[in-house]
Length: 349
Ligand code: NAP
Ligand code: GDD
Image (tube, rainbow, N blue to C red; front, top):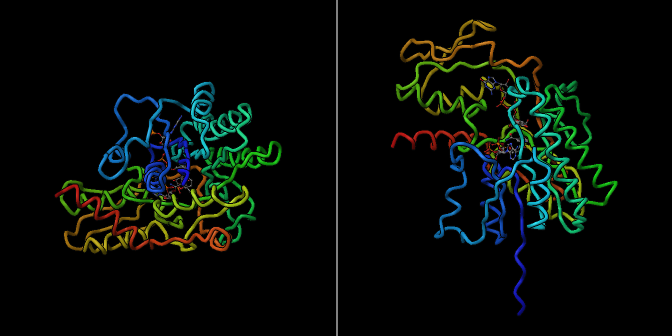
């Protein structure tokens, strides 16, 4: 019997949270993976180092290339060399708060970076290459009606990160309509994991409270405790990315859990699991979380963690993905928190 040709995937953003889970998934599906890593002064490959372990993964199936999506020539050259079956564009300046400090850079990477990849596919005339764009619930921004958001809900971004993601979203739709490229958007709501970057709120909370419990940190300083988010697990969301590119036609898909939590309720859940009893006192910038066991203030608020314009509410309706992609989240928020706490506690073993 003829041997089936292995599929080739190219992942921009392989060193990030999602890139690492996606690479694991695709290696297990027998893909050949090419990942693009930008140059940095330290290795910055902690999330993918285990993939080069020849016992669990066949390390002949993964290759890393230096590149940067701010550099159109290197992007085109890499795509030309590999001619992948599937391109996943997960690369971005992905921190919303930081996009207020470095708006031009954020737009260059998060918006124009997507354009550079799609232009490369077009110029190289790669008819069979499918493109996945990591779109975001942050595109919805100012939500007027606090129902679950779906593929038809209008966008009103509240940060240059959100504005850039709207650009990249429409660029993918445009290349699909104008040039017939298989370009799909996954509109992913917040997803977290033990591999989440330390300045995103869930990781900051889990890491902070764990360290406070272990006596190596005194206080956790946060911003808006009342934003509502729909938090899923990154491992589940990597599966959706792959399913989106296996669907019979390119399309746009909301990926979410359809559950809502405030930042404060997330803190309370983490604290409870760590057997910490937090009592809340005060309001606004003066709100404090007091540890009932020690009587000490362990959570306070600093206005530097607020955004000039906030996204107050995000909850996603993933019915379309459930119906057509047969995708649904398998990991609850409670289990996500357990995973994140377990990973933090294991650092003290
Ligand atoms: P992440 O951990 O911040 O990873 C971003 C990745 O992009 C990293 O590998 C980063 O490399 C790479 N990157 C940054 N600038 C680059 C450049 N100029 N050239 C090439 N690569 C570059 O983000 P994530 O949470 O995995 O998210 C993946 C994607 O999904 C992002 O586009 C994000 O905006 C989007 N998204 C995320 C969520 C979420 O809740 N996590 C929700 C919706 C959409 P370094 O490792 O060198 O920094
Ligand atoms: N980061 C951070 N740090 N956020 C805080 C803090 C803090 O100290 N205190 C309160 N928050 C609030 C933010 O104001 C926001 O309302 C909420 O916690 C979540 O913040 P982040 O975890 O930074 O995530 P995000 O929702 O802004 O953006 C993430 O999700 C998007 C999808 O909706 C990122 O992963 C984006 O890349 C992604 O597109």
